[in-house]
Picture 1 (spheres, helix red, strand yellow):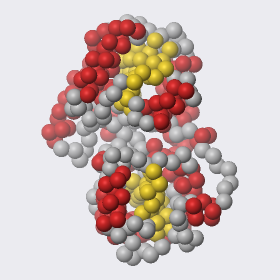
Picture 2 (tube, one colour; picture 1 turned 135 degrees about the horizontal axis):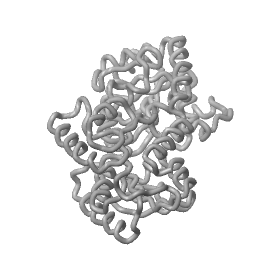
Picture 3 (cartoon, rainbow, N blue to C red; picture 1 turned 120 degrees about the horizontal axis):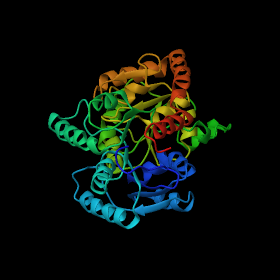
Picture 4 (cartoon, rainbow, N blue to C red; picture 1 turned 90 degrees about the vertical axis):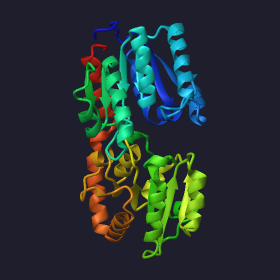
Length: 382
């Protein structure tokens, strides 16, 4: 590295992430690895829920609250940058490890100003196929410019990786997501009939499940519209919607307007996704934009067929016709036909599920940990 040489053993690392939820769900094992390599890690992020205190109290992480938003144009992010700049002055970090586009922008600005190395993990660039040309131009120009101040740029899907190959960052890598930890899921037997009843399911119900945050890019209005179409021809179907977010109440109202109040079941944030996956028949995910979708990997791990959208990240995971069916994000007719096919062809669904269980092994946590370790060695910090 041409900037200040640094080794993880003895280094002070500032990890910048937009939300505590990102750390809680995805980054814990990788932070533990950094600590095992001898680094002191301070986590800088916004406090959005129970995750912040649990990371601090249960996992012993040094958490520093700095409010920021995912949208790069929010004024609060300017204040966040100033706060992070003061943190750097006070603590003299040796390495910036930033996540997500907003965290990535702030981290690299800090690295540029203080001449310290930066690792940036892009969990999905803000420019992508299907986005507006103006937004893509703005965000791609910004990312290309900041690449000059990036010692290692880590991507998670083919579209992002190919987009930045010719940028002027020192190193570009692609890893298999953040890693799905197959050991964290409780696969012990449980009373499925009793659990289904607790969720409001009948014995003969076919179950569709979605797991994601209720925000615009997850495209819940289209999925609810598709489910409403499905219900016109399928009487014994239920839709489990797992997650929280800004649009949750709005989607509950929308589901009621579609006449789905007895069929669309909003479960909120769940810590028993493993059980929910095991009593479901198909995973449904029609997002507009992704990096590499963890919930799809979880569904694959539990042997579910997947009906998903034709966007980056999703198409990296789901093999059309083998592990699921890929449709347009807003193609209600195609989505309805896909769900109908998978729900009514048990042999096809089982074949897809078995295929996915093997396919997802490439994305297990140990694989990603080894990929990151190789990157640390390649950029000479380990």
